[in-house]
Length: 289
Image (cartoon, rainbow, N blue to C red):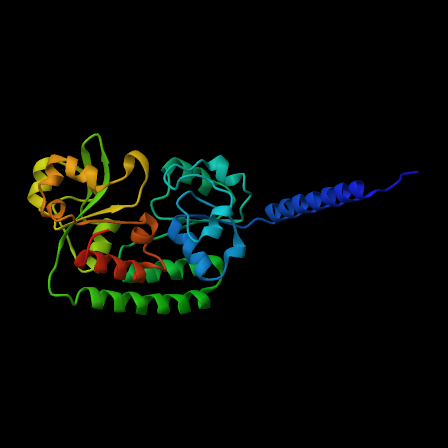
């Protein structure tokens, strides 16, 4: 005969709750779901109200905050096939550029559909991205409504930004490590957002993200230096800018025009891009922060 007391009842109830929770998670994993690879992909899934389809995300998927509670399968450009497949997904939706190629090849050879979403740095590119994600999730009507809304907002933001009288030259600094500046040339998300916000990319004679010589930086003569918000050794601060001889010689540094923004917000080209354009445009033409 077992004698029940308050403590044993609480322990039994707690054990039952843990078992139920564990069983629920196991069942959900067994049913499968969508793995989103790419911060913009995850944002679009949430904007569509389809987050219940998600079972995992990559490291760049940091918005909305609720997404960070999902299992993390690694960095978008350094994926492990084993890590992704261990989630037991029914579908993988990945942003163009995900990799490495060998990892994608392994994933594509599995029985799980891998859908690659194009990533073009323009208003039409955002619309196409939303529509492609919606199609992959099986909600094309929802995607069309969201795409129309975002398209109109981005168009309005671009019109406002490009209606200003001056056009500042902007140098995007991807990283500043050991005195080496990695800048953004043509065909980059940084160049795209700078143009949409009414600026001119100060480095237009290179393609992609490349190291810049001191001479190239001085010749570029940017009015504004733009960087992502980062902490630690990768942070681009006023102190680090002014301590770099070439950057310190630019009009941007001399006038204290350093603008930092969240990388995903600035370069994601997703549902929040209209807001990012407005914020960047205000920063380019107002005081840096």
